[in-house]
Amino acid sequence: MVSYKTIWFNTKFEKLKICHKYLFVFFFSVGLLSYANDGFRFIDKHKKKESVRIKVISNLVVLPIQVNGVVLNFILDSGVSKPILFYLGDSDSLDINDTETILINGLGSSEPVEAIRSRNNQMRIGGMINPSQELFAVLNQDINFSPTMGMPIHGIIGYDLLKDFVVEINYTSKRLTFYSPSTYSYKDCRRCEDFPIELSRKKPYLNTEVSILGEAPKQVKLLVDSGASDALWLFHDREAGIAPPKQKFRDFLGKGLGGSVFGDRSVVKTFSIGDFQLESVKAAFPDSSAVALAKNIKDRRGSLGGEILKRFHVVLDYPNSRIRLKKNTHYKKPFHYNMSGIELQHNGMQMVTERTNSSRIVPSTIESNDGSIEIRLYDVYNYMLKPAFEIADLRPGSPAEEAGLRKGDILVSVNSKLVYRYKLQEVIAMLSEKEHKKIRLCVQRNGIELVFDFKLKDPLRQ
Image 1 (cartoon, rainbow, N blue to C red):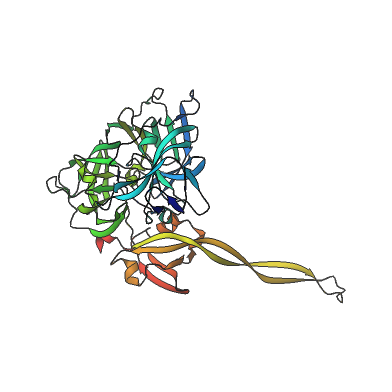
Image 2 (image 1 turned 180 degrees about the vertical axis):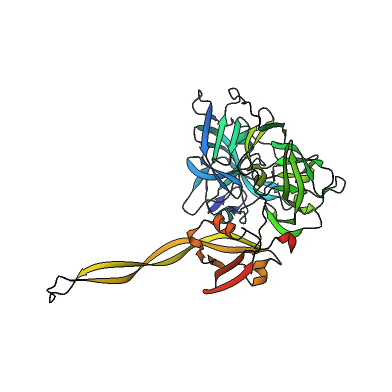
């Protein structure tokens, strides 16, 4: 048994430290045989369903799962097979069993990275349990979900949780419901559409249609990837006629096991799944070198991510190779790009001082015989620890960069709104609300507060 934390691991090869880095997209493959496990099941064998509260952050589903008795936060990622652990906080620890060091390949590079394979771990979510789960812990100090999510994220989980159930993902009510396939019944639904999915290497693929430049739509096979926060990733393919439009911009797309992934961002004219058609859809075209492993999947043209999936009530049915989609309240919302060029992340805590006006009623001195009272107003200071939001990166040529902001600046306020009163995703929304909106950003740099003014601008119109 090995204790997993932000501490050194003793393995049969060498001492290795485990940390993590947030990914908007993730590709995972293991070139070794997987050990079978019992799979998840209802603890009460008579139970027919289990519902779990989730959080939806950056278009990603986050759910709590116990691993060997310790509650951890996982992203539901249909693009992975085995659960993968990343970082645990300084106050957390976890024992994992039957370990060995291996090499795995991942998005961002063709070079393998080190990981720990662990077998015979107990995982529990609500009233479901897997008493013998195989999982992996990545040995890359740069892999860290939490700063850009604004909350602790400890891992990702996909196929092993989904494979034995019919799973309803409700992005609006923020619930994940697992049903027994033997008792689940599809209700008649005129606003729903059902589609076959192809399960290949334990990952679901769906046939869709895309029109990039306004030409006739072409059929594209996409990975259904709930662990990707983007709307679409499309792979360059000249023969298939897949390439970014002329109106595009260069950007950081995400981080994989092998490092950062860059590419072009643009908009496709239409994207369709059956009779569902979305217009002016965000699309990323990653550099071919970064997705070489992903492109090895036969006929795969890219990924369908969370920014599209969250527009539907999703029923994901692995046992019957089926997916059902139904529009929800997000369906008609427009797609937006980051119009400031600022990539924010949580970077520890900072001491915040707030002054409040208070009054105290004090009796006058003994010499007073009129019964008068004296009212004294004085300043009361509250000292609090609040999250520090740091500029993690700036898009070259963006309004924020041209205004003089720098990587490492700590945000103090946006348009006079003190940012520590808001969640990370709310602050990000302030910087992406509306084109031409004026932004006054107060930041702290080397202990000095500086103010910068700029206007939000659509990067495709720069």
